[in-house]
Image 1 (cartoon, rainbow, N blue to C red):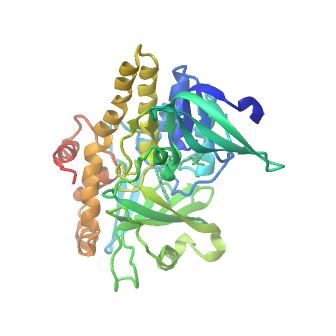
Image 2 (tube, rainbow, N blue to C red):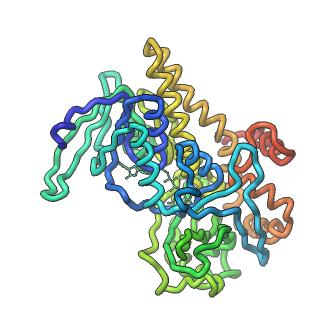
Image 3 (spheres, protein in one colour):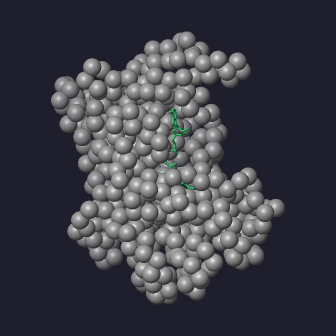
Length: 429
Ligand SMILES: Cc1cc2nc3c(=O)[nH]c(=O)nc-3n(C[C@H](O)[C@H](O)[C@H](O)COP(=O)(O)OP(=O)(O)OC[C@H]3O[C@@H](n4cnc5c(N)ncnc54)[C@H](O)[C@@H]3O)c2cc1C
């Protein structure tokens, strides 16, 4: 089979089959484009994640023709926030443009279902295919990729070449192809590190997500508050995804002893969660979260970047699935236009619409997010926010709208309009 694939052709080559790759491939295939997806893993494969899906992510899943409630995925109706001696339950914001519920779904299941949907729409998928490098023409324009497949039994490797008119890098945080084109991470963008584990829990079937703002870097109350939060996301089936993350405003990842902080934090959580060692499933695993467009430009020289490859994670809450899927849909729209144009210059103009779409949707919002990260990096500010903010329900509803990206981009109520103005006036540094 690998020999047949050697020197295979397609219109668009998508590398990586996470949410970014699946959404890009689905929307391209739906428009009749010949799209091939290369994935190094074999589904179902795991991905370190909190498995939390906001209404924005639900919207993108629906846009791929999947009804998550019919699939039996665990819905949730908001977030309980705990800190500074307060607890507040915040339903997802009422919004015309977003559904009224979020979800949790393990990435083993979610990612497989999304890529299956892309394949059902007509995309071709090659698993067990590790892309090594970009193929370019003499001018450095992306024209495909070379990859290695290993025979599953003999482990013998085959080198393969895939040629395409355009290439999309959806390889996640390490952005394999973007790096080859010299698009390295920007130093002035926030970077978080987060760790998560699964537990069997009596509260695993609840329909509110829970977030804890008091993460201490030492003894609780006697050390510094970390700029981040801990989460408990009920997954259904009596399982809960428990994790924590901390962010820094620069490209350096925070060098914190995550394991230690995690175990100290869960030891102080109420017994009713049942987060004891014997209930832990698998191990605690961590990974970086590139944020606020830390790789730019999202289009150049025939190569589009989508999802974590472009550092699209929200600096407000660590959410990356909704932006990755939104960007996949918009990248596909730009590619469809580019493929239908009559000259290379015209196609280039069509492709340059893609970074503009991203900027319209997230540009001001993420600039505001960078300011937010710089503020909460100061433990005194973090402390004041948890102590004095959480007991003000109207303020917290507003903050929740901001942090969960639940505000309307057009019109909306007064709080939406305030956020629209803030995202327009913020000056990125
Ligand atoms: C601990 C943690 C918790 C998180 N929690 C949440 C959360 O609750 N909600 C949320 O929305 N986001 C969360 N995120 C962020 C989210 O996981 C990412 O933003 C999201 O997975 C991005 O999707 P993607 O498709 O861009 O990349 P990925 O999901 O990383 O997919 C990349 C794909 O490319 C493949 N690949 C990589 N290199 C190659 C190669 N050379 N050749 C072929 N294939 C390749 C990989 O195998 C993978 O399948 C969390 C992240 C972490 C680390």
